[in-house]
Image (cartoon, rainbow over the protein chains, first blue to last red):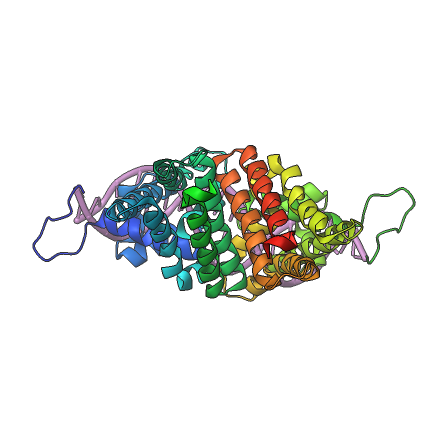
Length: 198
Length: 198
DNA sequence: GTCTATAAGGGGATAGAC
DNA sequence: GTCTATCCCCTTATAGAC
């Protein structure tokens, strides 16, 4: 937030605009299919000027990952207002159902970005895990609060279910697959969250 | 198989070599990060010569998808030798556990390729679903044989579990996540496959 | 039928003008 | 501090030599 409110009714700073444009384009087209010229154009910033804000394209990608991590944090903080872990975990998965049309077209923003960056070996592949790790940690905390034996394992199972559902929905272009998968996960959360079953 | 055995002890034809090189490189680096020069070099074929076999890069990608579909078919046919659907479904998932080190580094070959191609709108995004669809159809057939009510739904749940597990394993670079996920899926298959539970 | 040379275009990145 | 002009490399694709 270097210069976010430098004028009364002005839109966000250029840096912010570049990051959100990059996030959007990289989600819809992928990182390597997104050129810096595209990002600049969409952010309404002169083409070569991107390098004033980001030394390299990779640095811009890192900024997108940082923004995603913040987004995850904001989401989980909202969820914290709900009464119990079961409600919170169900509400988390429901977010992907709400995004089902976008997910079925471009995949989960976190999953597809991570999936593309994973295969690198320039350091970006490590940063790519950030948003997912935060989701896992939060979910594990909820399962722990429920008194489950292996909260980390359960968090992995939950996120795998979400990400797998998103991937299939996108591949088959069927939003309802995401809905169905979220429904199954809700039922599963109930099973895990009911002391009788543990 | 245009000219696969044109000489006694000779390696596979150039076209085959190009396809398998492309499949390997596109799995490890992604489609857009793989240049035709790379593919040609790895296949030991002169650079510009790729265009004799494939009119465009997209056509080469299509050939890779076709090869993956054949690979899935070969896999499911092998699995057909097993006594029952439960064994066959467990053996299917175990394949990803066996590949866990590759999966944790480069993702599932089918899932990551599909994930990258999904976001296009040039027709390749439709072809991308081929291998996954064949896996789903086969799994649904197994659940149907078990007498399950919603075989297609169960197949989706199974593949989502596999793909989600692969994505997380790759993102976190932890092969054991794939193993753990396959273990959970085995237990789930038992649940679904036991008449008492239905 | 096989391969080389090269065209044509786009990409990331830089130097320096304003 | 902001932006323009441009460099250079890499990539796909083609034309035509062997």
